[in-house]
Image 1 (cartoon, rainbow, N blue to C red):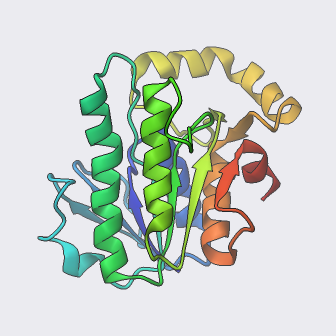
Image 2: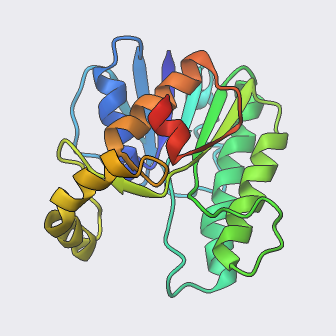
Length: 219
């Protein structure tokens, strides 16, 4: 399986990249990002790209892949609705529309979050935007598309957030998070399980297009 990864420098993307690189069934990984990952591996190739609303310059390099793991995401805290929609909806859909033209037989997986609003009518701005993004991705003619909605994620194997204070919180709460992963699988998963599940659904499929934390852990 040949994979394209967006968001490989983020906490979720780091975990997915690790699992791809150690999985013998993943032949190669193409990371598309604005900055180098700082990772060297025979399977890994990187494309540095600045405008994530226009992929026309690099489209020939994006063809022929079996799966896309789209792990880009931002927090809505302190962000106005227009900016959040651009960074969440516009960028995701620009990449997905380019990829479905190039490789309609691809499986597209998108990381959203627990509480995403599929009705697009709720009171939370971020949940409405995520819901619209999910809904419009599911309308594209990919071989299949899956929406991953983890709640809490315990980072493992050196996976780190790009935000310093979040890393500090994870360091302090690491023992508690480990307990919560075991005790509350409906709400907690790990970066390892998330990566394994994304590879698994791309390879084998899943009965439902939306996977919550319990589905991720079960897979």
